[in-house]
Length: 186
Image 1 (cartoon, one colour):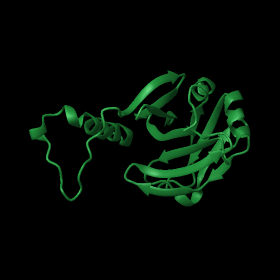
Image 2 (cartoon, rainbow, N blue to C red):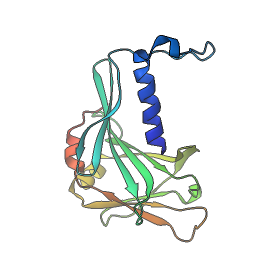
Image 3 (cartoon, helix red, strand yellow):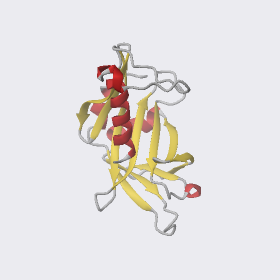
Image 4 (cartoon, helix red, strand yellow):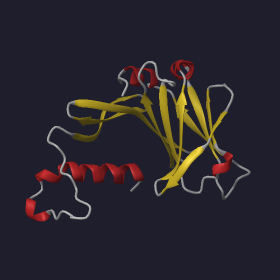
């Protein structure tokens, strides 16, 4: 079970909490679990555009959504995840991106990011946890426009076990524009 699946399962269990018989739940007094409000809805896939999923959480009638893509290597093995948050107008960036790569990523080599034949940009990793290593960065309006017009992108990751051979993951832009247009800024 990968991190996203286990996280979604955990959230689903927490959200489903009130429907479970009250005698089966023991609240920890030191770390109490606040039962979810009835008007909150845990993570769900609202729609799919090409390979992009629009994943949402509904809290008090407000829906917060992000664009999601799972990146696989040439052997069809899941390697990295990308979440894109549409930012409000007037923000320093138009989108916030979170990329999660496997543990064992060579952090000093940084994450490589390019769209079509554009120059590869490098972004630092912020931290690692059980789910993997996380790089977070922003995209300008011009960057988003290049993704809307582009065919594909590349995400480059370097493994500590084989630093001489970085591996490139293909970022599909199929459906990106319609997914982007379906999400309102958070």
